[in-house]
Length: 521
Image (cartoon, rainbow, N blue to C red; front, side, top):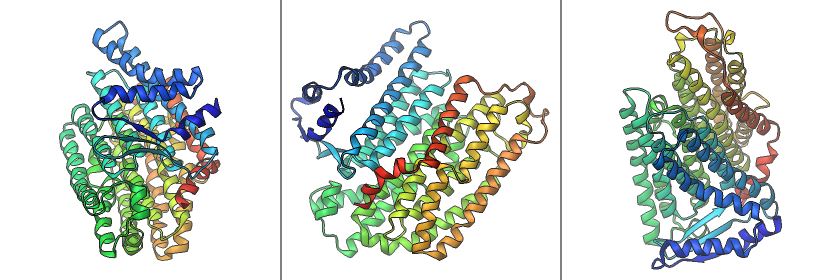
């Protein structure tokens, strides 16, 4: 089975698909390759089940059979879960052959050369994407227009995964921007409060503004150098110093907005607070990572001189973002806003590691912290959503003493809080440790100020946990004594996230062995 699986991905070089023959030729070519490589019936079954599972979900919605909600929910969950297991199998066995190689499928005859490349960098984010979306589909509550909500989630998953796969700038821009449409609708339609329209506009306008610079840079590269293929540009294009500085700014702004960096962060707290729980999980775990992925995949290899030139300024800007977001987080009264500003602080630490000059430890630390933050932030937003379903309030001052009624919830919330403050043994600690090691070697002055983020993260994390879990009941706001502890599905959801967090905290080599050679190259 392993031999056949390797043969499939190593020998798929080019699928020549003419535009005149359309999608039928593309489907025929793909499935003929699958059959010719003699994939085992089980693996073929997984692929076909995921493809036809989406068609089955539409049939369920149209015919409205009995218990259609539970059936549709199960189909959506298992579709995403099967994708996760397929990528996980590929990650464990296929990548052991050559860490540096990029296994790709070329599709010619469309508007550009589409190259879907899977290397160690992309695979980490693909695993994170499928894992988080599986939990999201599993934890969706019954709601009005669930079928439309699930459809927009699938569209978001499709856009995020293809953004991590493509190595052509035109395709990257299309999928990078396609994620904005479903998230705008998810927040604007299924948001929790009256300010959801304002939050949706913030998300749309900030992201669209930054993407205009990205589009201009891509057009310039295509006109001047005749290609938008990233590996070809990094190897063949001879950018002048002025071109590097100009193009670096064009690519930096959209990624800085998406991460987000200070002062482009205003849209994130509003979007988090107004989004439904699932929307907040996807936003923090995956969409913020598109900016960091853009830095690692595009900015660093294409514009090395500009990275060194602007690096010190960006590092100081990131330090301001870490300290500012941490201090503002302490002053918040909404549970989601605290985690939202904490996410800004952690992602600015990612920027610190990314722009550590010529330091592989910083790049690895930035990537590792993005993966770790994706898991921990998902757990925190899930936990806040679970308690909001019971109390219908996120005001911190209304809470207190819930450890007496919800001990399981408090245990998982404690573990996620420790990870959020980068406690040793957690996944966040590994990423931040590598980032600070890179700062010791590159910019010790920045390290001194960035260390304040460690202290401040402990302050707002411990303060939030103590204020919510301990103390006395405040029954004048809501009768918390009637709150029940986590259900079985909620417990399993948080358990899986905490388990991944602890595993990556003690087995960091599991990720670094695949990403280090790619980043080194």
